[in-house]
Structures are given as C-alpha cells and as structure tokens.
Length: 135
Image 1 (cartoon, rainbow, N blue to C red):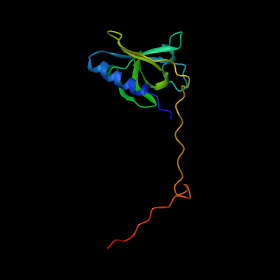
Image 2 (image 1 turned 90 degrees about the vertical axis):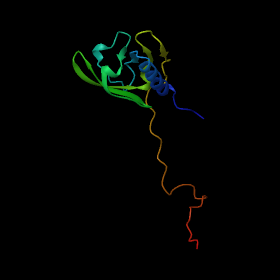
Image 3 (image 1 turned 120 degrees about the vertical axis):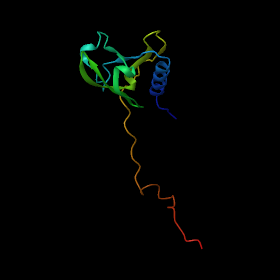
Image 4 (image 1 turned 60 degrees about the vertical axis):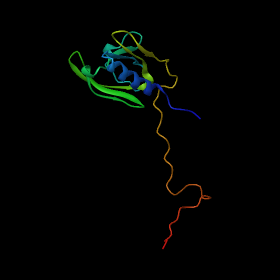
C-alpha cells in the first residue's frame, strides 16, 4: 500500500511553527520542476529560488496537498506564484536557519486525479440495496 507524500504536511507544519515563533519562513524551490511558476529572472544559476513566505510579504497563501500558491511583489511588480510541493527543497527560518531540507523527488509531477468509479456499473455479484416498508 503506497502512501501520499508527507512533504506538504511537513511544509505546512514547519510554516506554522516558524511563524508562531516570530521568525520569517523561507522556502527553497527547484525552479526547473514542471509546473513551477516563479519569476525566472530571480532564479539562480543552480535553477533554484529562495522565497520569503512570511504573511507580511505576500497575500493569498495556500499550502495544499499538491502545491503552494500565493501572490507577491518582485521589484514592485505583482506576480502570482505556483509551486508544486515536490519542487520545494526546504523550508527554514531566516533568522536562525532552523527548519527542514527535503531530498529531490524523482517524480515531481503532480499525481493525476483518481479514476471515477462508475455509478451503478459495479460488480454484478453485489446486491443493490433495497428498501421495504416496516409497519
């Protein structure tokens, strides 16, 4: 039985821990992962970008199971960012470096949605539920 990635849960927990301790959360992102939308002029020569995700530095932060999204300003220009969780290489506090680094994921594409199960077209050996009047 395979489990989903723990990375989005760890990112969310560490983000809250860093903010609760009055520190500035930064994330290190692999900007070359498919689906990453960041301002490319700020990506370093290694293909990485460090982003300040403090509540005062951005708006509309959403840390989901698949990706992180928010709006921020770069050089005074607003930009909508989208970062698949698999592209996050680490999250840490700027002030003391405490946080966690992650290994690069071999499968950095977001998982495809599960196949819908057909309604009423299941296993014919299973009986359909029925109702009866009880007096």
